[in-house]
Image 1 (spheres, rainbow, N blue to C red):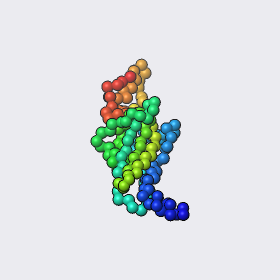
Image 2 (image 1 turned 30 degrees about the vertical axis):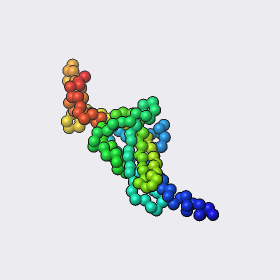
Image 3 (image 1 turned 90 degrees about the vertical axis):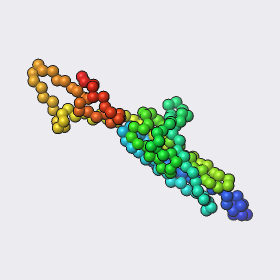
Image 4 (image 1 turned 30 degrees about the horizontal axis):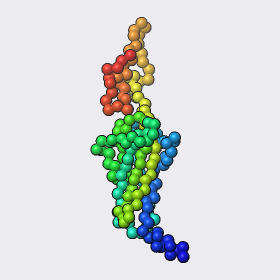
Length: 168
C-alpha cells in the first residue's frame, strides 16, 4: 500500500537537491576570500525523479551588512545563469555576502529549491619592495634622511591601480 501511494504521489515529485562547494551554510562562519582573488562556487544538483527534461539556475548575491537582504548588482562579466559561479577578483567589496543558487525544474508542476553559502571578502596584503632588486636592507648615510616611498615600489592587491603619489 505504501509503495502504491508513493508511486502515485512521488512519480511527479521532482524537487532538486542542491549541494554547494565549498560548503559554508552559516553566516557566522563564512568562507574567506581575499579581494584580489578569483574564486569559484560549484554546485552538485541531484533529482529524485526520472522524468526530468531540463532545469533553470540563477545565482543571487546578497550583501549581509545587518541582514542578508540587499541584492548586489554585478557587472556583466559574472554569469549568474550557470550551475557554477565565477567571481573575478575585485568584483565584490569588503564584507559578508550570501550566495544563493535557485534551481527550478521545467516540469508540470515546476519545483524550486534554493541553497546558500556565506562568504567574507577580506583585505589582501600590500606587497612592499624597498628596492627594485627585492633587497630587504636599506642603506643611507649618517645625517641623511631615509625617505620611504611605498608608492614607487609597492603593489596594492586590492585596487586596480595603486596611488603612487603616497610618500612618507
